Structure formats: C-alpha cells, structure tokens
Length: 354
Image (cartoon, one colour):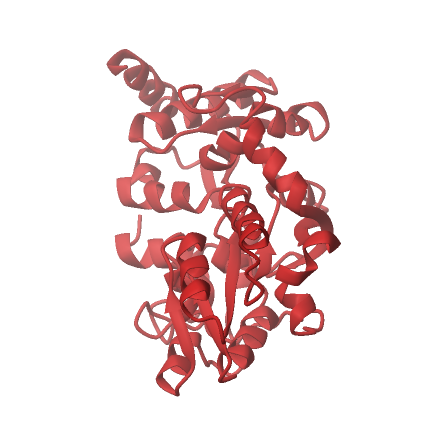
C-alpha cells in the first residue's frame, strides 16, 4: 500500500498536462478532501469540484416547509436524522425552532427508531423523513415492509430519496460541462455495484473511479483520473473492491425495487431530474406520507443571497459565496450546505481555506 500511495502522489505532484476538472459526488468525500488537505497536494491545473452528494443539501426547500407545517399538528410526531432539523425553510424557520414552539420533532439514528416510536404512540401519526441516496433507501424500504407486517397504520415515510445516476447524467449533459472525471461514491456503489456507474464510460464518455474514504483511497483514485486524462483515456475503475462488488448488493436492490418506483423529482440547485426520485409504490400508499397527508408537489426556493444551488451543481466554490463566513456560519446557517456535516460549505468552514 505504501508503494501505491507513493506512486499516486508522484503522478499527482508531477502532473504538468492540460487542466483537469474532477467532481467528487459524495459528501463524505468532500468532507475528507477538505479535512485531509488534499487540495494542497494538487497542481494548480487540477481542480476538484464538489457535486450533489449531500442528501440534506439537495432536498428542496418546499419539502422542508411541508415538514414544518406537519410538525405543528398535535397528532403528528416528526422523526428525522439530526441534520434535517437545522435546515432553514422559506422563512428561515427550522424544525429545531418548531420543536421549541411545541412541535414534536425527534432525532432518530435509524428508521427503526421511528418504527419503535410509532409502536409506543399508537394514537399519534409518526412521519419519518426518508432522506438520502441508494445507501439509506434499502433500510427505509425494509421499515415500510416491517410496518406492513406489524399492521402499523400510524407510521409513514415522506420519501425524499434520490438516485445518483440521473443526477450525474444531468450534470454531464449540461451545456458547457467541462468535467473530465468523477470520484464515484463508495457507499452508493456498495449497493448498486460497479455496474451502476458503467454509464459514465460507455454512454457519457467520462472517466470514473469508485473510491473508498481512506486517504490512500482518495489519492489513488485522483491519480488514476489524472493519469487517464493525461493519456487521453476514458476509464472506469473499481478502487473499492474490498467492499464494492461488480453487481452490487442484490438483496438491497431487490428491497428498493419492491417498495419504490422511479419518478421525476426536484433537486435543490438542479431542478427536476427525470426518474431520479424514489416514490413509494401504490401498494404501500398507506405508509406514504405524501398520500396520507395530501401533500402538494414541492417547490424549490433559496434564501436571499444563498448560493447553495450553485455550490451543489459544481458551479461555485463555497468560498466564492458572498455570505460565506459573513452572515452564513455553522451557528447561523442560511442554506443547507452550511448545515450538513456532508455539505461543502460546512467542510470549507471547518477546515479553512486551502
């Protein structure tokens, strides 16, 4: 491994070819790249761009507003991962503030926690905010099946789940896209497999390396992408084979297919992307919060001056936002990219300028 890291560093540090633009799609990669100071190792012609890999960040503002409205109903308990509680809605209100006003909003470490809460409170409706990509979707699907088996009619999921492939396609097909390669998310690839990213090479003619999260994983993946560009090659490499199988996790994908179906979905910063959402199938409508509470389609909105949309789509570095380190800080976040631990702005704030 030491030899691999040494070779990777040599490829990176000695690169003197044309400009290379690499997008990391995973929010954890964004965080680790900032934390490890990897940008300091890169030649000036190699540019790393953060993409739409933070699930909280791509959730449209209208979904936050709808959830806050539900939270104030006396018969509703909102269950969510912690980051979602601090994401501002259209009026800079948050679920955390709504909890201070009497709303029953609870942090869950997993969707199983929400199932237990529903069992303990049979006279209240428990709504779990299903946020994430293919990584969290199987667990959410399993919870819906468990609720069906238990006859738990006071549990439902607001599915805000998203699929990775359509978003990457949308970025590549944007006019003027100059991204040469992608650091592909290892956690997502563990579910959908190497096969889930073949489209990058075969259809989009872009390089991709499926990458883990250790320093040597990231350095190796970057070196391979830089080397491919310098040689005029298009590659797809699974550099996370210790976890990612070519065909993925068959059981997890079967769970998703059983419970969810694709739908056109709104992403913050990217607009509506065809077939990128995971809609709960009609068979499981009794556990679909959108159906149960007759929620209208979600709109998107940005707080005045917020540049999260540009940051998420890779069009702006967090430090270029005029609100960054001014009115927008982790203590007073204006947009979701400063809230989530996987957000580009939060990582840039925490680990400083590079």
